[in-house]
Image (tube, rainbow, N blue to C red):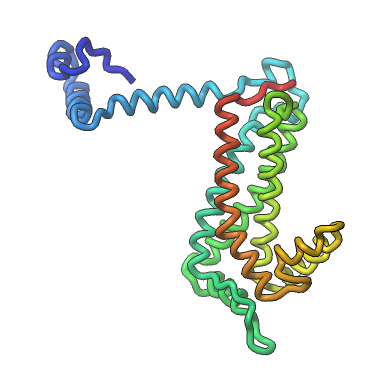
Length: 267
């Protein structure tokens, strides 16, 4: 944004030389008053430049440019799946942080009684105001994120957007898909219900089947060869403290590379 004044340091003289309506004069007077103290015009110009740079990153209508009306993967909305997955991630992160105030990662229980972790989930679902809604939003945001990331990877693959010079970003995307799946799996175990328990047991068996390093991975990720308090604590720490920081950093790098390279045209 530029006010097109002859002398950027003489706001008042510039304002006096213009024939303006009362509303325009009031607006410009307020803007000049703020600019003299906070240099807001410089920031507005930066925002305007940023806006046009963002628009330059958006792809042209591929269906029109390349006559691809019958090609599903070149459908324009599919080029927004990456942004859509980021939005879902942010929603899941915010709702998950709120749920963390009430969740207790403890597998202890009296004989025949639900675990402490499961009781905390029941508390959120049944007694906390809007708790059912909060957990449902978190759950659905996580599922939408998994679906959006998966479809995003398919779109990138079938349009050839993984090719040179975008190989590094493709590999980062593969890592992000793996982290997304582990996010979903670790979160699935946190309620420590019957479904969670047997999902965890299946996970242990899967890791034990890995040659050479299977037992080491099971010990590291699950705290042993059977489910216990150590398993729940490990999943909680990874889900809440480790993976959000790793995933957020990789998403920032991923988006930064897209910003520098632009969205790939179809091959």
